[in-house]
Amino acid sequence: MARIAIPFCMLMAIACLFTAPRVRAQTNPAIPAQSASGTTRPANTPKQPPLAWSSLTADQQHMLAPLQEQWGQMPPARQHRLAEHAGHWADLPPQRQQQIRERLTRWANMTPQERQQLRENARAFRDLTPEQRAKVRAAYERFRALSPAERKALRERWRAMPPAQRMHWANEHPMPAHPPRAAPGHR
Image (cartoon, rainbow, N blue to C red; front, top):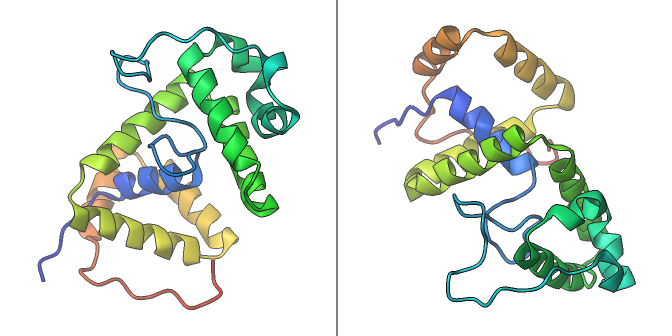
């Protein structure tokens, strides 16, 4: 099987993507996706009025608490979509609810540039072929299999490299066609 070299910088961006809030539409997204124009509703959808924070149920407010400060600046369609999702999230197991709140908190604490970079990373991932996405996921799983200290050291080493050195490293270390499986219990 041929090897497909995916630059390590892309793998790191994808790893950040998987550990950051999800911006791609899914069954229970932490943050709904936005189009390139920043709008999220189709053109034929009627415009919705803003949704006041005080009109949310206690469960919705609890789930969306990390976004409370930004609530008034959000487009109404996004407010409505988040409120709808929060209603569903309230029925999830407590551990999953906590994961969603953590993702919402990370999203709320991001700068606009970080959010834009995350959206671009998500688009780049969606544009990969299914085989490339599988390889990126496998690389991410290998990354997750590292101990926290190993992950931190890898991130620090990567950040310290100049861009040219990163590209050279990525070219010298292409992804294997069949990555080794991580040992159970090392996540």
